[in-house]
Length: 356
Ligand SMILES: Cc1cc2nc3c(=O)[nH]c(=O)nc-3n(C[C@H](O)[C@H](O)[C@H](O)COP(=O)(O)O)c2cc1C
Image (cartoon, rainbow, N blue to C red; front, side, top):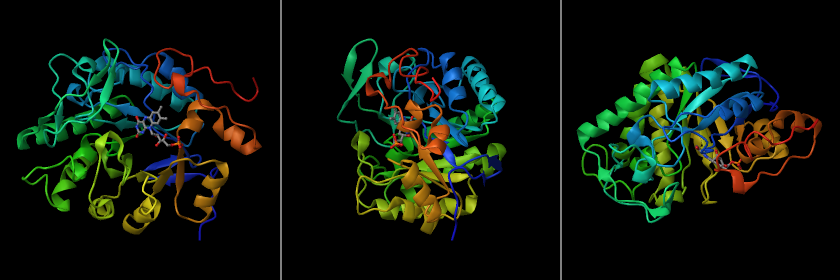
C-alpha cells in the first residue's frame, strides 16, 4: 500500500522528478505559421516549471503530421532552436520537460500545412467534421490518402527523427501521442482502420503501428525517456472502437516489456471502462492519470495506489503556481475557454499568481 502525496518526489524511467504533479499536454496555437514556437512560449512554460513534469503541447514530427493552425513542429532547425530556449528556461528552474509528438493524420486541413504536405491515415476515411483555418474559418476536413506499407515505414522514421530532434533541443524525454483521434489512434480504432495488411484487421495488427513507432523512438536514447499517451473509449474526432478493452489490453501487454518511462491515460467517456485499472493490470511501470482531477481526488488516487502521478490540464493552464495553491489550499483561477487557442499573451501568460 502506497501513501504518496502529490508533493513527493518520484523517478520515471531514468528521470528524477521533484513532485508528482504533471502539466498535461495542451495545444495553445501560438506558434508561427511555420510551426516555430513563439517567444511567449518560453514564459508560458517557465511560469509552470514547478510541475514535477511538463508535457508540452502536441508537436508535429513532420509537415504531413501538421493539421491545425499555429501548432509547433520539431522538424526544422528554426523549430528546434526555438524549443531549445524553452527547455533551457524550464531546466533553469529545476523542472523537467517532455515533448509530446503528435501526428494528426486525417484530422487536418491543407490550409494549415505546407503546400507540398500530404494528409494521410490508415484508410481513406474522412472525419465528418470541420477544422478551423486562419484563412477561411471553419472548413470540412478532406478525405485522407491511405498510407501504403512503405509510407507507414516512412512515418515511423519521422517519429524517430522527431525524437532525435527533441534531444537536440534538450528535452528530457518524448511522449508518443496515441490519443485524441490522431494518427496512432486511427490505427488502433476499428472504425478508422479498414486495412487488410499487417497494420489492420486483428487487434495484433491494429496495435502494430504504435508498437513499431515506440520501438523507433526507443532506439534513439532508450525506453526510460519515452512515454505513451492513451485514451481508451474516446469518441472525439469520429473515433469508435468495437472493443476498446481488448484493444488497449493487448497494446499495454505488448509494450509492457519495453520498460517505458510511463503510460499516461485519461478517463474514458464510457463509464463501464475503468482505464486506470486497465493500465495497472496490464502495465507494470509508472502510471500517470488525467481527467478532471482536483487536489483532493488527486491525493486520493495516489494514496490508494491506483496511479503514481496525476496530470492536470485546464487547472495548469489557468494557474501557473498550481503547486503553491494546492499547498496553501488557496482558490484557483478559472480557465478562460475563449483564449485557449487565440494568438497572443491574453489567456496564455497573463494568469495571475497568488501573490499578485
Ligand atoms: C486547450 C486544450 C488543449 C489540449 N491539447 C492537447 C494536446 O495537444 N495533446 C493531448 O494529449 N491532450 C490535449 N488536451 C487534453 C488535456 O491534456 C487533458 O487530457 C484534458 O484537458 C483533461 O484534463 P483536465 O480535466 O485536467 O483539464 C488539451 C486540452 C485542452 C483544454
